[in-house]
Image 1 (spheres, rainbow, N blue to C red):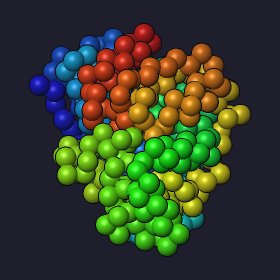
Image 2: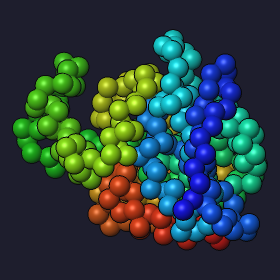
Image 3: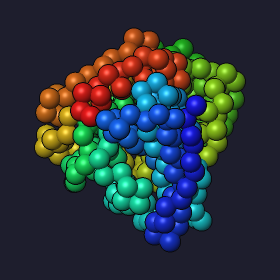
Length: 297
C-alpha cells in the first residue's frame, strides 16, 4: 500500500494543505503527478481516485487544497483578495516548497483553467499536462450549459429560470432541478447517492466560489465572467491531452475549442462520462491519464 503524508506550505501568511501519496516501490523513472482541483472553491477530495496511480503505476501523486478551500480555509476576505494570480502564485509556491521541479500536471475544471493560465506564464519543469474538462472561454461553457438545460423536463427548466430571476436556489423545485442536472452532467449520481469523497469535497466549498463564479452553474456573475484565454493557449508548449466525457457539462463542443487552439493537443473522450468523470468511470480515467503522461517520463 502507498504511504500518505499530509503537510502544510506557508503562503501569504496562511497554510496550504498538501497530501502526498507515495508508492511502496516508487519507480525512479516516473515523475510525480500534481493534481489541481476545481471550483474555485472545491477541495481535492473528489479527485482522490487518481491517488490509485501510486499503486497502479508506482508514481507519486500530490494533491493540495487551494487557498480559501477545504483544509486551506482562511478567514473572510474582501473580494479583491481572490484573483487568478493568487492561485497561480500558490501553484509555484507549493511546487517549490515540496521540491516538485520535474512533474506531470493534471487539472479538473477550474483546475485545468488554472493549469493553462500557469502554463501560459511559466511552464518550467512541467513535462505533460492533462486538461480535464476545462474551457478556454467561459461564454462557450455557459452557452452549452444552457443548451443542455433545454433537454431537461419543462418544469425543471422553469424552476431554474425562476431561481435565476429571484436569486433563490433553495426552493424544493430548484434543488430538484439542479440535482437532475448534476446527475446528468456533473457528478453522474443524484445527491443522495454521491460517493463520500464527492460529498466531502462539496461540503468544503469556500467563499471564493461566489466571488469567482457566482450562485449558479448557468450564469457567471463573478470574476470569471470575462475568462477568455483563446489567444494565450496558442502559445502553450507543454504536451497536452484534453480529457472529458460525452455527457459532461464541459461538452465536446466546449472542449474542442481548446483542443483546436493548443498546439498538438490530444483528446480522450469517455463515453457516458459526466464532468467528474473519475466518479463514474475511474478505470477509464486512470488508464487515459497514465497512458498519456507515461510517454513524457
